[in-house]
Image (cartoon, rainbow over all chains, first blue to last red; front, top):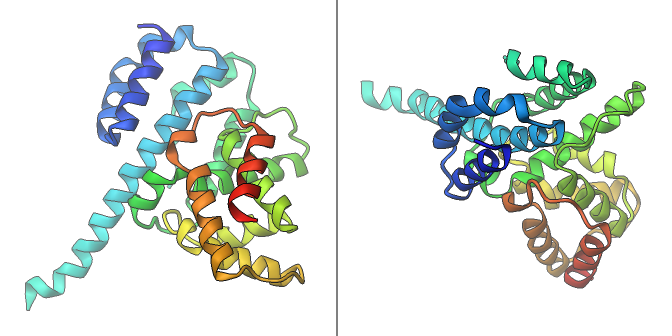
Length: 76
Length: 165
């Protein structure tokens, strides 16, 4: 896989608002493309990956907060 | 808690850009200033958060003598600089005001922080119409789709002028 193909796939996941899919794809293929990446391409990957990691973290944080709020209701 | 990817650390050391690691550290620390808010704002208009975060990161690094690090999200940083220029306010003051809000709530507080910064700069606050127009323009500029775009400073300034003034 070329860096361009890799970046295009990440972008597709981003446009589909699928951060989990993007992270899973990146984890599977990043090692394969890394030896051929330039610093500029790595920065683009970081930008896309950061978006995905942040969205996933925020969703997890929201779910965690919701659980805390929901807990007393479940007990009552 | 911040996690560093060993793979990326090796990569940046391998390509001779160790300062990129410091930059990432500062950038991610700014994101972690408070518990995260909702993902909706960040996933749709990521530029409000990333532009402010990277703008502050870059200014901080420059103040410490680190000048060779490329700016991540240059489109968003340039957009902030042009917004501040158009309004006659200091962009770092604007970023510092926004920094007080958690990741995921920066857009929600943007207009009130702009007005606060205007007051601190002894300038008139925005009218209701200007607020609506500015939010419209910044929603366009800070859309997630511009994440990897190269900035055209003049085009950004023209858009702001056309929409807001």
